[in-house]
Length: 141
Image (cartoon, rainbow, N blue to C red; front, side, top):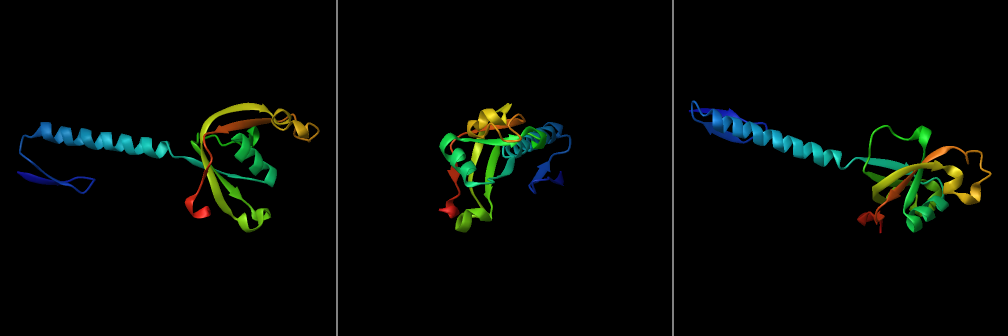
């Protein structure tokens, strides 16, 4: 018999010639690695800045956020967390809200914000990120 130290700090006694047990342990470790990678991949968070109070109103009432296409991240993300800068007063300089991404679509800024059709960036492409239920962090209540 010989003793082996596995990556998850478990000790396993393997009988000489016990290749079946050794392969089974290796396969279990691979499956655990795949699951951990999937869990990490599923929780990629992009922190977005709410530039003004009207962005917060849109977020909470319509469950979407806009990102200029030319500044959108190349990596996929599953969650958005929303940073509120100092202009939010005592509710500023913090992240209070987050949500899981439902889907994204490209559209013109002017279509997203019809009251701002004369905005200099009205014809620029933006991602409209639709969100599931907006959640408030427990400590932020």
